[in-house]
Amino acid sequence: MPKIKNSDKTEKGVEAEVAPRTRPKPIRISLKDARERVSLRRISGTGKAAAARVAGPAYSYIYDTFAQEMKYIKVLREIENRLIDLGIGGRIHRLSCFKNLREIVNDDIARGIKTIVIVGNDESLIRAIDALGDADAALGFIPLGAEKENNFSKMFGIGMGTVACDILSARLLVKMDLGEVNGHYFFTNIDVPAANFFVDCDGQYKLSFLKSADVRVCNLVGWGGGGESEKLLSNPCDGLLETVVYARSESFLNSLKTFFKDDKKASRISVFYNKKVIVIGNAPFVAWIDGRKVLNKKLEISISPGKLKMIVGKNREI
Image (cartoon, rainbow, N blue to C red):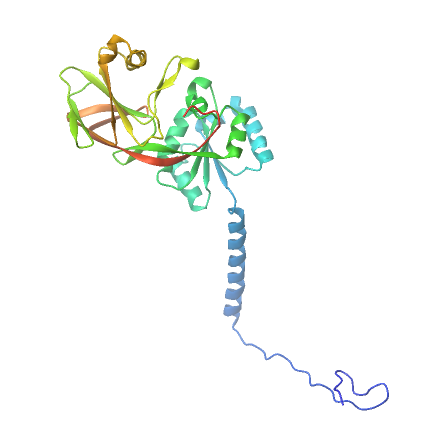
């Protein structure tokens, strides 16, 4: 006869066997263990949520100090609204004397952010490149301020204002070289005015000067009066440094112009292509690295190919 559960009799009054009810055995745990299990579940859930937030491209926006001036409030509001519309909003930092750029970048990288965006001018971008260092993150740029302070905007095909937001959203990455000097990165060039020094090139030959001459070691540099006449002397994607030597009596800009025009005076300028350059002086000499003045007796300069991942536009010049 089949067993019938939860009933003592069938409809016809025939007795049926009732299946025994079983209860799970109680598990005895201490209050401390119970709290630890609840805490672990919460931590696990928080970790999954954080991983979901950074699964896609995460952005961090760093505003330079001058961006806090009243005249930039309107344009910043337009930029922020455009970024939200494009779905690439992110953390916003405003630099001040109490906030160090390198610390902000390191903190964002530790959080899993893969794109650092600088809102400022050329000087802001150069400082960010050195702060980014060896971090595996892309660098974006939203130019702010006067056009004469944002030469990289045209060079990288980024544009000004909200136009730069659209370029950022397209996320076209180009790997560029970075120069390294005495443990620090530079992006444009190093100028060494005339002094008592010699230049060692790749350990194969040395340059010394009978007359006074200036030396410029370039990763990226341009010249010209603007418009279509502007040209680039060096390519930041070729894995080489350009060592330019020119007569002290002539300015660097004029020397470059005569060089490109094949003028008879072009003999005043010489260009050497190297991967490592060492400038050694008999005494400490002045040098300008990305526009910053330093005093040193020896500069060890090398190239790091493809070190920088830069977001650029299609109409870039490099």
